[in-house]
Length: 47
Image (tube, rainbow, N blue to C red; front, side, top):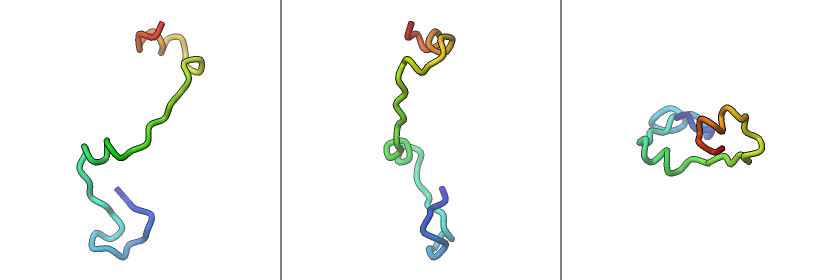
């Protein structure tokens, strides 16, 4: 992934991480059920 600190590193502005590391260190987004479409709620088995 590209970093925001510039290109002064050995990888010219990129950071190499494994998929598990990325999955653990990313931000989740929480959406209220009221904001979901009814069709999507059916697909997610929330109705």
